[in-house]
Amino acid sequence: MSTHRFAVNVTPKPGILDPQGRAVEGSLGHLGIDGVSAVRVGRRVELSVDAADAEVARAVVERLSSELLANPLIEAYAIEPIAGASSTVSEAR
Amino acid sequence: MPVRIGVVVFPGSNCDRDTLRALANAGAEPVALWHEQASLDGVAAVVLPGGFAYGDYLRAGVIARFSPVMRAVAAFAAAGGLVLGICNGFQVLAEAGLVPGALLRNRRVRFLGRDVLVAAQRLDTPFTHALAAAGRPLRMPIAHGEGCYFADDATLDDLERDDRVLFRYVDAEGEQAADEDREANPNGSLRAIAGVVAPGGNVAGLMPHPERAAESILGSEDGAGIIRSLVDSAASAASRGSVAVGAASR
Image (cartoon, rainbow over all chains, first blue to last red; front, side, top):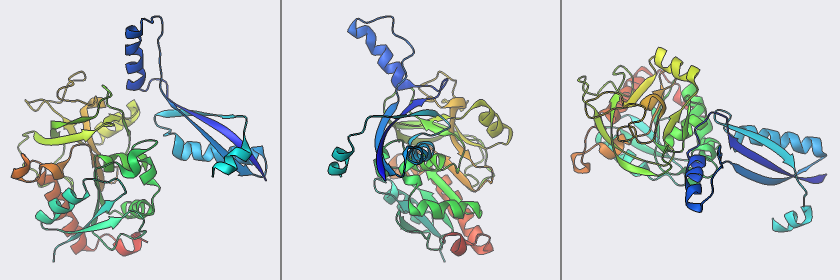
């Protein structure tokens, strides 16, 4: 058993209206920034999985991403392994 | 004997009492169903009320979808049981895949608490049959941050072809709100859809709150017909014994 740490990036699917992204974009003028476009706001979820190996851990993340973290109708997700401070994580529990 | 209708209470539900009261006023025996219970206590219909179930964390309605009571509601719906989702309840039904589509953040991002006008698109459903046939728009409040109805074009076309759009946002003349009319369609719902019914015809969701517009003291009684429709339909279902509520709820 080992601990594996992942990040799941959930973003609105292409073509899905993203009013948050538009609001961010709209505020850039007030900052005096121009030339920025196509802002899309999503969320990033970081988590640790205890599993036999990395492959099993990733399968768990795949399942929870598609069933819970993202709504496949409107959101896409991408899973990336990240450096894990697994001991810190266990203490935090 | 009054028909028993369940109102699910999630942590964060805040329209459950209004809904219980509206159902009682319409002649039902309302029953609160706690989110952790796996049985529906033999009710003849279920309402998922408005609020912020589980704080609406992650996405509105998604955490609630995995609660024990929702497994029972899904089985009840599959067996033909009547289920109505109001506001947050609609979001829960959409997340659970019990009605098509999704509710996105309002187009102008802000939370909206105000009255809207909607028109029932069908008067032959368990949720609308008691509404007056004349097409006067119904005035009911909305109170949501994520009410922009979305589905892909194919799903929207299916909804229209099969006549499963239950309510639309309309202007003062009763005409479907134009795409950019943020007065009449404040959350920016596609094709001005405010409510839909699932393919089986027994599960429906809507964003406006009929239970908050069900008594004259509340400023509008326009929602009472929706509540009354549900109560009457549940009473007929119960007397027919058409829904195996006991079996479906376990």
